[in-house]
Image (cartoon, rainbow, N blue to C red; front, side):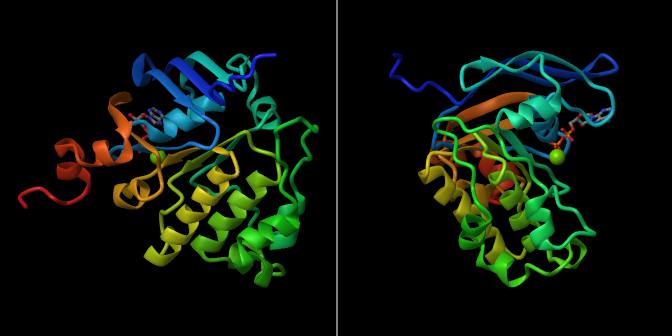
Length: 247
Ligand SMILES: Nc1ncnc2c1ncn2[C@@H]1O[C@H](COP(=O)(O)OP(=O)(O)O)[C@@H](O)[C@H]1O
Ligand SMILES: [Mg+2]
């Protein structure tokens, strides 16, 4: 038996192009169990294109190419729903929440993945334990929830589908600073339990507080990659994203 776990997610040569224009050209990215990797970059840099391409999906009609492995298995030829069932779960910017259903109903509209060793499928009670606020709001409709509550619900739904890797597209957007910290700290808790997480964030400072590694994307390409602290201290990050230019 091979005892080295290897990356949960292994990406090579991932490209997305719109009408011949390359919006994403990612040479290599690995995500290990229990690791939180942050993806930062300006608006339009290609962050959403990246997480969507991992799912084999694109807004509009992008041509996708490249190799994606989940748990050692090639999935890049698979349709999106099959990748989700295999444990690649994305909480998109839209939060993956049904507006006309209440919290409980939202949490029951998930599929139960096949039992697999090393794949933890969260129960509703475990989700409520992680996000007590959702339990308090269990009878409220998706449309009645705050941005933060919708984000918690989106993450909760993903957890109940047994993620091997969890991808989040800008979870902090529209959230009060205190909630941003709470939601991002929860990701740390999930990672401690072994989950691999790819976190797309515009809020670089908030991301730096929870990620192990940080990746900077510009025009679809990875231009910086390394430990959060090292990348965070790079002048390109400080000047453009942390408001520290001129100080
Ligand atoms: N539907 C589309 N049609 C054409 N080009 C698109 C489309 N969606 C995204 N793009 C291109 O891909 C680039 C990256 O977009 P996106 O991944 O949404 O950036 P980010 O999430 O980093 O803000 C955009 O600058 C745009 O040029
Ligand atoms: Mg985006």
